[in-house]
Amino acid sequence: MKIAIFSDCYLDLTGGITSSINAQKQALEDLGHTVYVFSSGYPRTKEELQKLASRNIFKVPSCKFFFRGITPISRRPDVVGKWLTKHHPEIQDFDVFYIHYEAGCSIAGMKLAKRCRIPIVQVMHGREDVGESNIVFIGFRTIVATLLNWLHSWYIPHKTIINRDNFLATTTAKAKMWTIMVNHANYADIVLTPSDHFRQKLIHYGVKKDIKVFPNGIADENFPKNPEVKKLEKRQTLRMIWHSRVSGEKRIMAFLQALRSLDGDYRLSVYGNGGDLSRAKRYVSRYNLNVVFHGNTDYRTITVKLPKSHLDILASYNFDTFGMTLIEAESYGVPVFFCDPDMQEIVPSGSFVMSADPSPAAIAEALNDLLAHPERIEKMSQIMLKHRDEVLISNRIKALVKIFNDIIKK
Picture 1 (cartoon, rainbow, N blue to C red):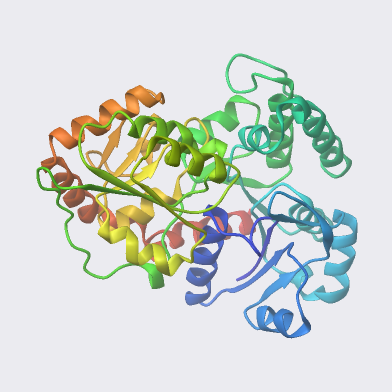
Picture 2: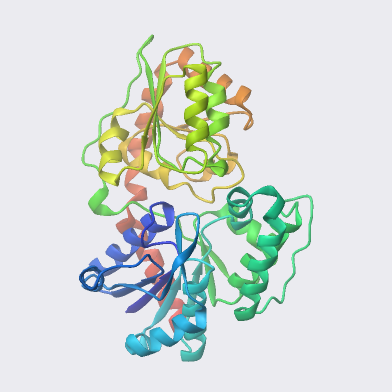
């Protein structure tokens, strides 16, 4: 099978989408399939582009100076489409186009697939309504969302319009971002989500295409061998690790506020960067919290530090559709903490600590209960280790291949 992946979040980025694409690409290639990846990216030398091309990874025409946050932006979908036809005419004979985002490069892939009558499998990874709210200053959110909505509608018809409500589209900006997500999904032939709770939200807002749940997995090459059961003794320091973005939607400030109310010894190591990093550092310094910031680090560093931790932290609420950090922790047998009840779907029952609500007071209460009962760490770790093989991408990839084959035949 020949598969072309399109994503605006891949080159020059770290995070869940990048990890997901890498793991799936390798697993598909291990099964003998041909996989190309097309992504926007920052400028590269000819030698760098050739090195990427040797792995069937290609940078599409991208803006040299204009980008959002730290994410490179592709040029207009019609420009990218012409480049694809000229430089990679072979993909017009591919079996399936596998789309992983909703911006320029991804749209170009969808439009080309329509022209060539190639099946489109669209992955809806995340909550763009929440993401836009955290990236854009409050006074500009509606303006930016309206502009993005308008630009998206140039290429993808907006047959469904989402209005403000009391569920998730609570502002005009969020409603417009939901309009983008729903219509983008409906333009595909089949839609994938990493979790059932996100699938239900998409259905609620009007996605009519068949939506299947395909959870993310850990690449076999990154899967640890023989990890040990984690144990926490009484009066021992609770070692916690944060390896998500240090940004508003991940709610590091709420977690730091909770640390002020802990009754026992703890240490939090933070790996990552983001818009709240400076603010978080000032807060830690002001209240003398036992928190160490390590900045952006490569995945190999995390694989060394994660197994030395007692608890992996994900403090987001009503944002994450999957939480790659949770299954990374599971692969090492490290128990996890989260605030969002939706995340119970991701890891085995009995392997996590969950606060009663997302407030700092509730977070502190949950952590203090753990400190008072340290033996829970060992029990949670044992459950993680018992189920960890389930998150191997090689154990999950056959379901994706079946999805591809079914849509090709259909």
